[in-house]
Image 1 (cartoon, rainbow, N blue to C red):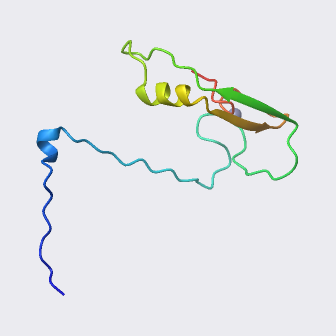
Image 2 (cartoon, rainbow, N blue to C red):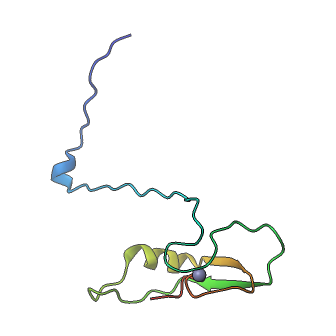
Length: 95
Ligand SMILES: [Zn+2]
């Protein structure tokens, strides 16, 4: 089998191509990073449900987040299962 180097017809530098990699990992900690809530995965029945819709807002630079605009146009929602001990971080409502 030949080990020839394959070349791309695209000039990524000329195209201005940029990419990034985002990693998520769950750490074993006593509480969450930004609040004192326990960092546990619950499997019992939740006390309630909360539905959140994407809503574009202007960012610090006075521009809309393009990814948020796309999600808003799709009409997607996020369904949260909530328990009695609930904080604004849990609902992604803390600014
Ligand atoms: Zn919390």
